[in-house]
Amino acid sequence: MARIDLNKDIKVADMQAVLSAIRSEAAVHGLRLELAPDENNVWIIRPAPQKTESTSKGALQ
Image (tube, one colour):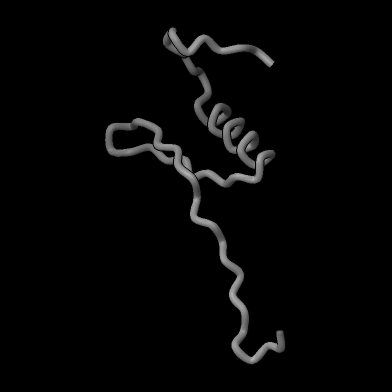
């Protein structure tokens, strides 16, 4: 995998490919991310809400 110098600007030709790679890497570590542009077209990346499994009230435990 290529190393990225974060001290320099990063030019991206295919933003969807970058976002897909970020989402895939997060999934490897058991994380879910929400990725969306804001009103200024700046990409916001944040943890996705955790899905909770509902239990039925009548179920035996």
